Every structure is written in structure tokens, then in C-alpha cells.
Amino acid sequence: MSRFVSTKPVARICALLEAFKLAEVPTRDRRQQPALEKQLAALEEFFVRYGNPELSADWPTAEEYLRARGARCELRGCAEIRLMIHIWGWAQKLRLIDGQRTCLWTSASTNVRVRLGIDREIGEALLYFVNQECTSSASETARKERSHAPTSRRNPASTRSISISPGDHKMEIHRRLVQSLSGEAATVFLRDAVTQLRADGRPDLAREAQRLSACELHAVLLLALAGCVETNESKLLLGTSRSTRLKEFRAISVARKR
Image (tube, rainbow, N blue to C red):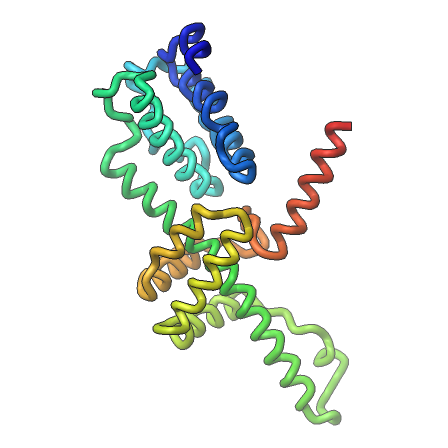
């Protein structure tokens, strides 16, 4: 770190990002490093576009950053903003930058937006588990209905697998929220979700889930539902889908090295 700082004074944002990447990222859990590197790359790309501003100058706001990332990347954009704020504090502790200067991305409005992003992300993660249970429950119900239907009334169409429409799927989720996820059931659900999130290599989301009360659980799930994030479009690597996706990524990585 000292050699890097002495040869490349931390006067501009991209130099600060590079210092963190070289000095801090290698010390993190290996499972976290790819995500940190992607977030740093997104931040660097944005600031390069704006001329790699000096730390002492005014630079683009967090709102401008989120607009540049776009609606589909807002969850990731909020995570990147949190990382930028963390890097600022990290650099101040090491006296790499002025300790009296406040990071421009720590305004009250930004903090509210980032908190909303955190709630949406944990909501999306927990919604994944609810979706899995609801889909399984709905499929089992449909199977039982088909098995109990009179043979004379069956037709080829009735023997086909039943497809649950997005609207029906959401109604099933709402029903589960109202009837099941309360009291002890909410506690058990959160406990299981925390265990799974840790196993999935997301200790950050596990910590957020662990802090939730039953009422807060309902709130973040409804927030995720309001965002209309379909399970099959989710970028989260969780549960069985995580295992498959990671195998694909590893195969691609091995192929590139060859």
C-alpha cells in the first residue's frame, strides 16, 4: 500500500478505487472477491466517463450514477454506492484522503435510496425462497386435483402440466404472506433463509435477514413483489439455481484459461 500511494498519489477517484482493489480486495473472502471486482469495474467505468474527477472537486451525484446504471441494475447500483461510501471511510482511516471531507454520496436522500435498495435486495432474495415453496405447493395441489378428477371427465388437455400465470403466482404469494408468514412461522422461515443464504455465500444478505421482524419480513417481500422481479430473471445466485449457474461460470473460466 505504501509503495502504491507513494508512486500514485490518491488525488482522483479512479486512483482511490485502484488502491482499494489492490490493497483490500485480496484480503476478503474469495467468494466475495468477484462481486467486489465487478462493482469496482462499474464504478471506474462511470467515473472515467466523467473525466476521472479529483477527490477535492464536485463529482456526479449518486442519483446520476443510478440513472446511468439504469432501472434493471438499480439493486446492483445501490450496492456499488454502498461500496463507494465504504471505500471513502476506509481511505480516511488510512489517511489516504482528507479526513474532514465528507463523501458526496452520503446525502440524506442517497441514504434513503440506498436503504431502499438494501430492502429490495433482501426482499428479492427471500422472495426466491417463498416462490420455491409456493410453486411446489401449487404443483402438488394441481397434481392432487388431477388424480381425484373423475376419469370420464378427463380430456387430453387436463393431463398436461398446469402452468401458473404470473397473476395467480402473485396471488398465491400474497395468500402465503397473510396466512403463513406470521409469528412462529415467520421466525422459522427467516431462520431457514439465513442458513441457506450463508450456504449460498451471501453472508451480507444473511445478516440483513437475521435482523428482520415478522412485520419487516412482510414489508420487504411486498417491496420485492412491487418491483415485479420475476424469479427466472433474478440475478441472485441462490439455492439450486446457484449451483447450476456457478458450474457454468467455472466451466467458462476454465475454458478461458486454456
